[in-house]
Length: 296
Ligand SMILES: Nc1ncnc2c1ncn2[C@@H]1O[C@H](COP(=O)(O)OP(=O)(O)O)[C@@H](O)[C@H]1O
Ligand SMILES: [Mg+2]
Image 1 (cartoon, rainbow, N blue to C red):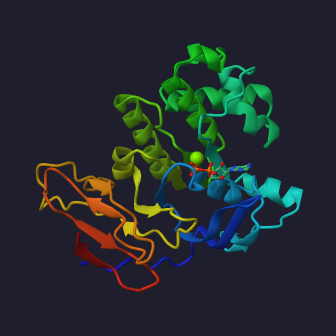
Image 2: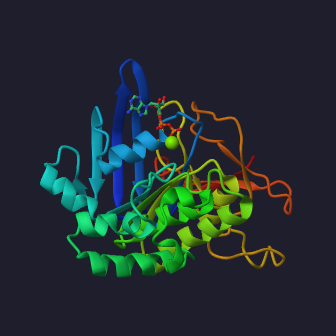
């Protein structure tokens, strides 16, 4: 039984985040800590506020209340100039890609480099081509418009754009939604590569449990406007116990969403690996200060 790891200086720390749209309360006091170089996956039903939460952290939506700290510094209520400086730490893959239809692929990737960093077009194009190559796209696509690409290629372009400026923190909003399993796995591998090679901190939103298993260090669920802490730590199979399975550092055992229990704050995820029969949920609730595993 492992203890939950102590998060000493969270890269991202959210407390009491609240957001309503008119009468509709979406975030009702979200608390979340994410450690440096950690890959956290946020799951939850459609319309539960996952994208709104990321947009609040990015400053694209103004929260009604709460604290958001990046590297220990409060970022709510920043001036425009301070916000622009902060944004350099972030890369974002928006749900649906959000590519500029009128710009060729390379300019989509280079947009932040040219507009945000003031890098010259020739240099920015060079970097864009490198990033496109990193996501498996050749220079032949660089002059095409997004509409000329398949859905999977558009996702890759959006990913290349998210990583173009080598950000410290990357948000992936539904990176594999709408992709076939093979393309989804390509994107999963790219996300893992980003976290490993760029040393980035990653927050991903997904409905895709195969993707969750692959990319998450920890899994959190948003429900009823709450997400108090990442509720489940990824349970990695030990090679000794699972000689027959991929036991890479990010290989989780299978997990399946079960009915949420907001009262207890636990029991959200059931490990349902067909290879191993009944499995464990590892509770890593920092609130309790204890890490423990229990059979579901
Ligand atoms: N800019 C906005 N104005 C009004 N309502 C919004 C806005 N953005 C999101 N919402 C509402 O907030 C809720 C949560 O949205 P969202 O975070 O996009 O859900 P999801 O968890 O599927 O990502 C939804 O009911 C959505 O309609
Ligand atoms: Mg969303």
